Length: 625
Image (cartoon, rainbow, N blue to C red; front, side, top):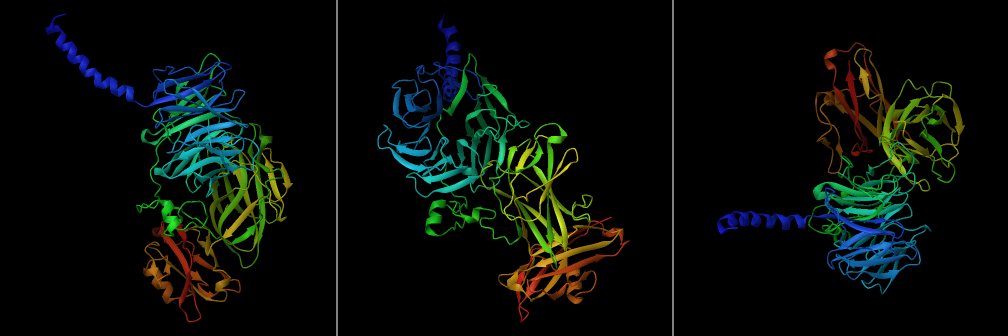
């Protein structure tokens, strides 16, 4: 070939060199497969292409799990379940394959910190060892007797996480300073952390709850992200997973039905099968060849100081002792006042909610009655305890409040007062209250809470209570009624509640208010006021109290005409329990032009010298045609 003809070829070849180098540097998914005496380790691109075996695993180590890559040492590490439980390591080309140590119980892990120390599970204990397997220390022993999940190390912030006792626990690297991060979990097999976005992910591997879920680092907003069998109470066999927030992806392995590796977005959407095992193999461990995600310094309040330093210095408070600064939580330490508290006992059989099959006789609604004494109850929220047997498609159940039908035996289901969508957690053996806003002004009488599954695939159990109050009922899909123990339910009060939230201009009507300022304000004067211009910025009454109402013509009218229509008993005295009732009256055939007008009402409690000492929340009333 002449030089003239070679030149273009050389230029073209040179142009490929950077591309080739770049392609080689792309992140790879590295995974293990198991089969009797035939384990595999394989690598592929994030698109599932170019699968190859970087080295061969000896046939006797045929149950490889929890694969990880330690960037500092350039080594892969994993656990093996075949006969002898052990931890293994090898260079990225398989050289120097070594058993680091053996365990007496089931081995999970290992994971590595910045000093190269190993964190692993031996049965129901979390342990730490030096890189060569020496100097073994027990960091934590769980109450559960079955094996713990694979630990996760956050070297940046000096934490190790592990699933144990129906929770995700966090410790300092020496096992001290234990915190509960998330509760309501059955068995957290594998964990992933995203400190930058304040999230933790996990695989829950209980047979009836196998899924990938995530929650905020304060344990709130738990969400199922991936459930391969949402319509069935069975396990899809998830083993391992990784997350990559920068590329909006989750990659997980499933060894029960499909024996495949799947990629989704972080919210579980757009699943794509990347790889399917063949020849009797099943996928198990899974990692990225870039190693575990390096976490940033935890600084949830964004003040440039690590959260741990803020807490140690007292700059931030941690009233619930979960290791997360209070200012980063929505409601870190609520102090509810319960009008009703049935308590919860997760040991006896729960009351079935939802459907266990497609036939009507396996579908149940649950009803709990309760009585309201005079003068009434200012209801603010509802809490229920139970567990989800099958999460379904994520819509959970709806709790709806009804008045009694006059018989004392059944609700009037044609007159709903308030409702809320809810979702139980997953552990059937622990107490995990779930809460929802449930605001309603309840005058004396009997009321019923009905719980109804929002989809046929939803199946749950409502725990029974400990109070021995009114018996609960169940109604099957065939309309049959069954009576049983009272359920685990708590009803918390609010300073102010109002019902209904809408009134018709044509029909007119009454909105009832129940005020509850608490015993500390018993026998004090109160003034219920309102506005039509919203609640923000509100009216400052003193340096610490702001009435959540704006000054407008309606507020001026009420100030000038206390206890005159439309507000009755608006300026009066709270009773010996700090309670009272009031009413907003709307005449029938009111002007249609008022349709859509929204009122807000709130009250202030006054000291004996008429100084403001307490303000309530605001409640809403909308006028409709």
